[in-house]
Amino acid sequence: MPTVVNCPTCQTQVEWSADSKFKPFCSERCKLIDLGDWASEKHAIPVKPEFDAESLDALGYDEADFFKDN
Image (cartoon, rainbow, N blue to C red; front, side, top):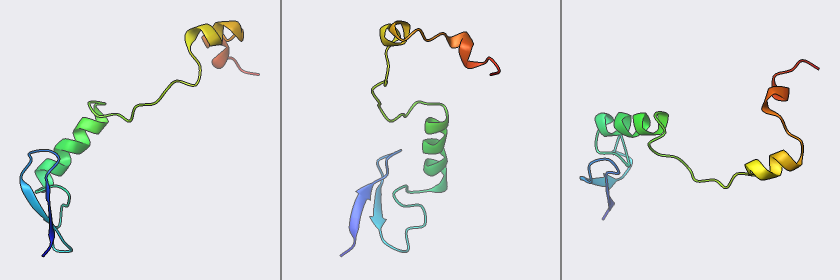
């Protein structure tokens, strides 16, 4: 018996098998909706910033320096 999962976009049940063309999505439409959510940053992978503003100030970092030619 194949595994059944819920479509991440619409929650419709989808059979997880080689025949499921859009798995884990139920359709191309749901797949594209999810892609759009990632592109518009509605979805994002949480990360902890390596440096906060105070750390950058302490290091003497200036955003304007980033664009200067060396």
